[in-house]
Length: 199
Image 1 (tube, helix red, strand yellow):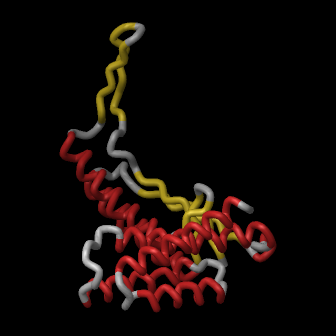
Image 2 (tube, one colour):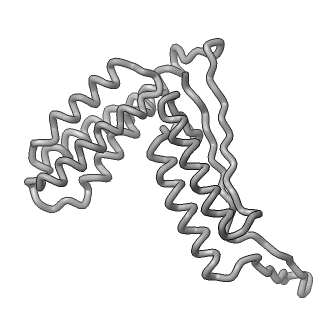
């Protein structure tokens, strides 16, 4: 089962009241002082990042698998709990829309999701290695990269064997030089983006 998910988090910039100074000036008083707004922002960022790790971007919406859904729910519960410790009115809302068997992913839609998953995976690997300066990775960096690649399997909301196979190919790259990994991933990503443009 594939799910469309949407995580909505309270804003740190909630408005307490506004007052019109003149016909061109509006004074806005925020509900929370600066230090509280920073706390809210940090919680939002921390849990939004975790949410994004577990979901796939697809034309402005987020998709997740049955396996990842429980993790997404827990991320939202934790964020909601932390926000409510600041103010009971703060919180997180998670919208879940299942793509049921009646609305099967097939044809062009299936292809679009397929390429979106692989594109997302390639971008995450590039982001992870982008800051590396040395050609040879240290063991802990290799292990971190392997963990990331293993995690990418959770993005395979289609349970497509070809996607699993492509991710396995990424695992083969870990022991290669950084420039070779970067070049291979970038070339593959360019091809994927070309495929998406052709849909």
